[in-house]
Length: 111
Image (cartoon, rainbow, N blue to C red; front, side, top):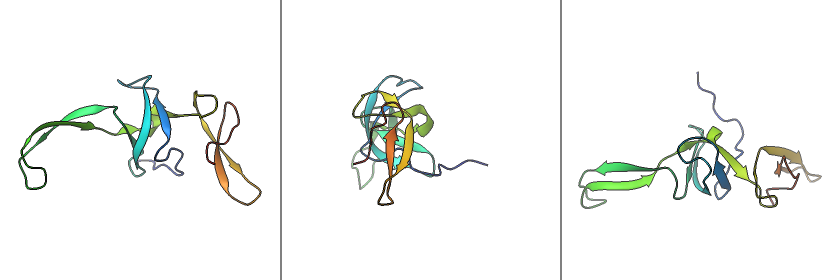
Protein backbone atom coordinates (compact mmCIF):
# COMPACT_ATOMS: atom_id res chain seq x y z
CA UNK A 1 0.00 0.00 0.00
CA UNK A 2 1.24 3.47 -0.90
CA UNK A 3 1.83 6.05 1.79
CA UNK A 4 0.14 9.38 1.08
CA UNK A 5 1.80 12.55 2.28
CA UNK A 6 0.17 13.40 5.62
CA UNK A 7 0.96 17.09 5.87
CA UNK A 8 1.78 19.40 3.03
CA UNK A 9 5.37 20.52 3.68
CA UNK A 10 6.03 21.98 0.23
CA UNK A 11 3.45 24.40 -1.12
CA UNK A 12 2.76 26.31 -4.30
CA UNK A 13 5.16 29.27 -4.93
CA UNK A 14 7.90 27.77 -2.70
CA UNK A 15 11.45 27.83 -4.05
CA UNK A 16 12.94 24.34 -3.99
CA UNK A 17 16.17 22.61 -5.01
CA UNK A 18 16.25 19.19 -6.67
CA UNK A 19 18.54 16.87 -4.66
CA UNK A 20 18.24 13.67 -6.75
CA UNK A 21 17.68 12.70 -10.37
CA UNK A 22 18.66 14.15 -13.72
CA UNK A 23 17.93 17.74 -12.60
CA UNK A 24 20.05 17.45 -9.42
CA UNK A 25 21.41 20.77 -8.15
CA UNK A 26 18.92 22.95 -10.03
CA UNK A 27 16.35 25.10 -8.28
CA UNK A 28 13.05 26.66 -9.24
CA UNK A 29 9.60 27.73 -8.13
CA UNK A 30 6.80 25.20 -7.50
CA UNK A 31 3.74 25.97 -9.63
CA UNK A 32 1.65 22.87 -8.91
CA UNK A 33 1.48 20.27 -6.11
CA UNK A 34 -0.09 16.81 -6.47
CA UNK A 35 -0.70 15.69 -2.86
CA UNK A 36 -2.25 12.35 -3.87
CA UNK A 37 0.87 11.37 -5.82
CA UNK A 38 3.41 13.12 -3.53
CA UNK A 39 4.75 15.08 -6.52
CA UNK A 40 5.46 18.68 -7.47
CA UNK A 41 5.82 20.57 -10.76
CA UNK A 42 8.73 23.03 -10.89
CA UNK A 43 8.94 25.86 -13.42
CA UNK A 44 11.39 25.20 -16.29
CA UNK A 45 12.64 21.87 -14.85
CA UNK A 46 12.17 18.21 -15.80
CA UNK A 47 10.96 18.78 -19.37
CA UNK A 48 9.57 15.84 -21.33
CA UNK A 49 8.35 15.61 -24.92
CA UNK A 50 4.66 14.84 -25.36
CA UNK A 51 3.07 13.80 -28.65
CA UNK A 52 -0.30 15.50 -29.28
CA UNK A 53 -2.94 14.51 -31.76
CA UNK A 54 -4.77 17.29 -33.62
CA UNK A 55 -7.80 18.51 -31.70
CA UNK A 56 -10.19 21.41 -31.31
CA UNK A 57 -8.67 22.66 -28.04
CA UNK A 58 -5.03 22.89 -29.15
CA UNK A 59 -5.24 22.98 -32.96
CA UNK A 60 -2.42 21.24 -34.79
CA UNK A 61 -0.86 18.12 -33.41
CA UNK A 62 2.85 17.62 -32.95
CA UNK A 63 5.51 17.25 -30.32
CA UNK A 64 5.48 19.70 -27.40
CA UNK A 65 7.76 20.01 -24.38
CA UNK A 66 6.20 20.39 -20.96
CA UNK A 67 7.19 20.01 -17.31
CA UNK A 68 6.75 16.60 -15.70
CA UNK A 69 6.20 15.98 -11.99
CA UNK A 70 9.10 15.31 -9.62
CA UNK A 71 8.57 13.19 -6.51
CA UNK A 72 8.50 15.28 -3.35
CA UNK A 73 11.27 13.17 -1.76
CA UNK A 74 13.67 14.41 -4.45
CA UNK A 75 13.29 18.11 -3.62
CA UNK A 76 14.18 20.24 -0.60
CA UNK A 77 12.88 23.67 0.33
CA UNK A 78 15.31 26.59 -0.05
CA UNK A 79 15.36 28.81 3.04
CA UNK A 80 14.91 32.50 2.23
CA UNK A 81 17.35 33.63 4.94
CA UNK A 82 20.27 31.17 4.75
CA UNK A 83 19.63 30.30 1.04
CA UNK A 84 20.41 26.61 1.61
CA UNK A 85 18.31 23.50 0.99
CA UNK A 86 16.84 22.52 4.33
CA UNK A 87 14.50 20.15 6.06
CA UNK A 88 11.25 21.65 7.31
CA UNK A 89 10.13 21.86 10.92
CA UNK A 90 6.82 22.95 12.42
CA UNK A 91 6.34 25.43 15.25
CA UNK A 92 3.18 26.47 17.10
CA UNK A 93 2.70 30.19 17.71
CA UNK A 94 0.98 31.79 20.70
CA UNK A 95 -2.20 32.44 18.68
CA UNK A 96 -2.52 28.74 17.81
CA UNK A 97 -1.25 28.90 14.22
CA UNK A 98 1.40 26.44 13.06
CA UNK A 99 4.18 27.70 10.80
CA UNK A 100 7.01 26.03 8.91
CA UNK A 101 10.56 26.77 10.10
CA UNK A 102 14.03 26.18 8.66
CA UNK A 103 15.88 23.41 10.53
CA UNK A 104 19.28 25.01 9.80
CA UNK A 105 18.79 28.64 10.92
CA UNK A 106 15.48 28.39 12.80
CA UNK A 107 13.84 31.21 10.85
CA UNK A 108 10.15 31.12 9.90
CA UNK A 109 9.42 30.22 6.27
CA UNK A 110 5.77 31.26 6.46
CA UNK A 111 5.02 34.86 7.33
